[in-house]
Length: 256
Image 1 (cartoon, rainbow, N blue to C red):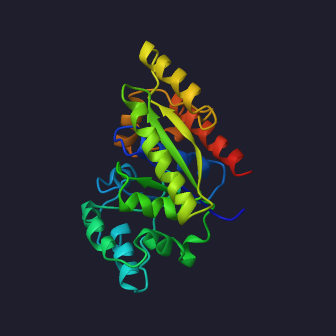
Image 2: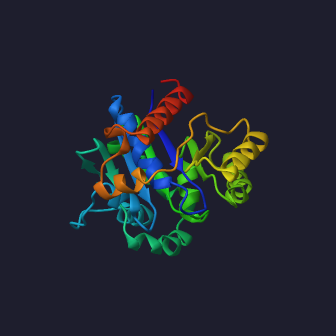
Image 3: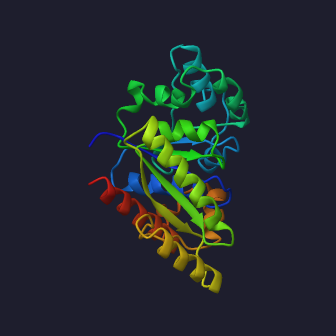
């Protein structure tokens, strides 16, 4: 199987994008897949989750700027031994991306140029942690991705954003990236409340074909996991098992 690129995206923050990215990557690594995670968020939460400390090595912002300028893209890939994943970190400087990308030729395909380097060919899965926006960085992720996972927190207003992001994905698929598919809508932070049940019922009615079988529960374990910089999949927890189930569902989507 050739490498698959997955964007984890939602224009609403606080829905579990970073937790999903790290733990899906770690779960795939546990079953022998070679995984690289890309931090495409100006808040750099994924980088922090993986224990990144800036030592002056290139990050995703440096790589994209170089691609815009037509230079040889530097190697910004790091390895996280604890979770057995490679990753490309981010930092606050990525917030300048809108400026330099707005002036770039084929601005929506700069990340595609970065990930086309030979060094990325060895991976089974590349997973992109997108920022909470549908701006030019998200367009870059959708342009290079094979699939999108949309985490949706089962709380009030969660459904409001789905029409917007699914419409954008359809537009990208119909114009610049015909291979792009929505892998699924991933319900996150489920609780045993009336609100959660109502939202799940609505999701089942309105997005039945897109709703993933895997659901992620609400638990403080997720915050502890980020603090310890260790994937939930490496421990014995309910959330860890749920993210392993998500990895299995992704594998089934792509046929192994």
